[in-house]
Image 1 (cartoon, one colour):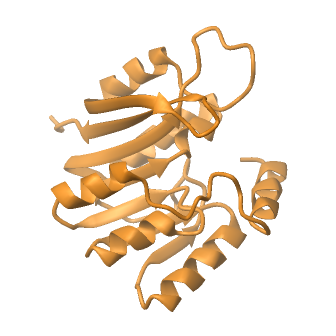
Image 2 (image 1 turned 90 degrees about the vertical axis):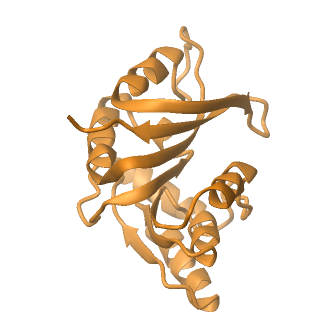
Length: 193
């Protein structure tokens, strides 16, 4: 992310950004109900809503966001609930201050906003910190193959490429509140040879 993008995201957190609903999605609740607690990382955690939900259910959680203001709000919310969550200001394409491994990597709306040329770096980072048998739970906007606009999103071709790095375990297609095509993906780590 460049300096302008960082500034813009930080400014959005002086109010409530559209994506910061304050509600943990049912897909994450289902994951929590079906899986034993472990170590989780929430990439693009914003004000910590989902990190807090995980921590309240026994998970040891790290939350990462490059927006200082969002991390400040997340730390305050966790303190108010007496939860110990490691919130870090960092770039998800680097994760320089993150030590894994993690059983769950949660990404709700972060990956699709990363510039396409930086996505391989992100994938290399999460491959490094995801335990064998771990889950990468991803929510992303989709983009038609011939999209002529610069809105964030992933294409079907990119999803196929992701499936060469991770095992696609499950996919649910739908729409965001604004009517844009989106999907939930449950990826598993590939067994290391």
